[in-house]
Length: 66
Image 1 (cartoon, one colour):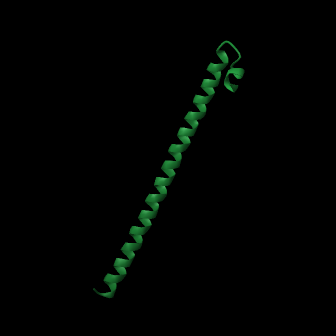
Image 2 (image 1 turned 30 degrees about the vertical axis):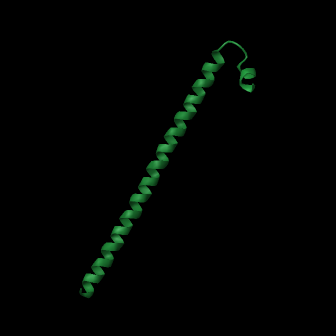
Image 3 (image 1 turned 90 degrees about the horizontal axis):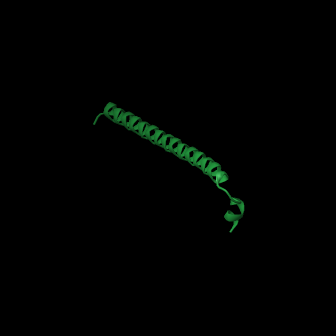
């Protein structure tokens, strides 16, 4: 292997490692976005359940404390 082959190999390795880091970063961003979406859905469902519970006759606050 010549010196230029070694340099090319090192350069290729650096590019591959850079692409791997970028891929991992994108995966983390997508996972976080997915979790944010789930959190938002849970928040909306909680609000919806609160509204539904407030329409149920009776004192729901005393029932939830038991």
